Length: 227
Image (cartoon, rainbow, N blue to C red; front, side, top):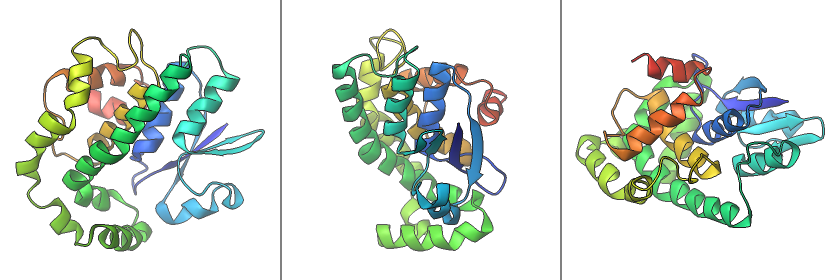
């Protein structure tokens, strides 16, 4: 299998959605071939079949969307399940909704210029144009004042995770499941592209370090553990 992943100019993988899949693969002990792509290459993945990343290319065809990839992995590799029952999948959908709105939006405003700085040169104009249209302001304006906002991100935006992790090591319960992958991928994003400390010490940081220990073969994880 091949996994198409969004990468910067130095091949570092930074997509929050791709890191969700990376952690899912680690939980299930599945190895795949990584194929790095830039933003403007995405529409051409698998002859145009994969329109977003991650895209998993299998013998049966391309699977697009990190959640659908996780469901596929459970179907074809039942060991170490990412979804332990119907209720668990519904729980993961809830976590995904929160992560894709509140958490991802909060992180974006803290690191948007850092993302731009690690992009391939051919991707920079695309990224700036599309994001500035979305935000209604320049990237610089969108990120301005992040030092004053990061404490609120940790105390308010991440409050649901802090409360859950006060009762166990994982969002999935006694062992990690796909809900852990979802939040981990979202928080791995700033750790890969930025030197700005988005995640402060506490239960979520402790949990994040446990997630890293599941993925010590990944170059980006090794770099974090070495600091």
